[in-house]
Image (cartoon, rainbow, N blue to C red; front, side):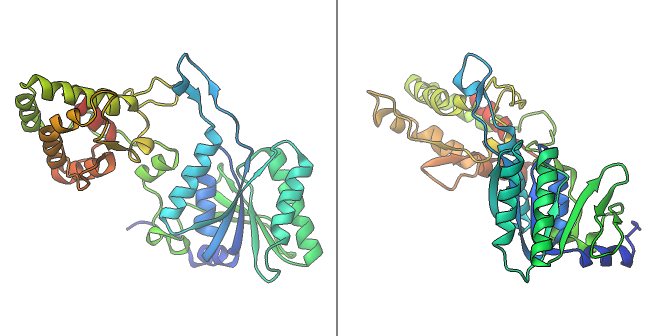
Length: 334
């Protein structure tokens, strides 16, 4: 039987929940993920303060190899993963990460616009030191001016605890997070994040068996269809125009040469590629391969090929995890 936190720990968390939680974004989204699940009241919303977006920086000879804004990736991933749990972002606010006046004014103005009867919290594990310092100052000023309570918190990695600052004359509190306080957590029936969810939170995917899906019969059928030179040309043209562009040598992609899983799963591949001078002809020649691939990969849309739908279909029929990159590799190898 797994250990459970005491009723006192659960009460401490419940006593410090707020309706509006201000979060400072860092490259590691986990602290904010934990804070949102524990410190928001049911139906509460969070406000994500992040540094101003940066232009992509070229890192290689190809335009596609530009360095991404990793902070923007962390922001979008955090928002998506919390949305999966029914936790909604109220606002995304950019600040100049080193400008104390901009940080102070932006945070203060956002807090002052909230109803005075509503509770506010600031979780400042993420963000730069300047963001944490001046966001804290801003909300201290709001608390004083409006005579309202603001809950200040951060995660202490050394003790695996959620630290609550002194509040209304009460001493600071250290709320242990091990064992995980499931009875107090929002979403997923209170369960702690799995390894797969932690990987997704960082925009990654745990690698399953590296062997590609066993689609020998489909490969043999395609090979038979491609004994017709024109059909083979049409299929290869589709793969070159539609599938191969999902490859990248960019430094951020470490997925056997393909885009990250979180990007691939959003892709739909159009069947209508038709280069100049080939309008209609190649699409007609692709008819038999298209029907075969739709059947093998469980596609319901006749106009496009969904990688996420193909992945889920194969995972169900094969009884194991399948990656979108494995599907791309299989298609590119036929």
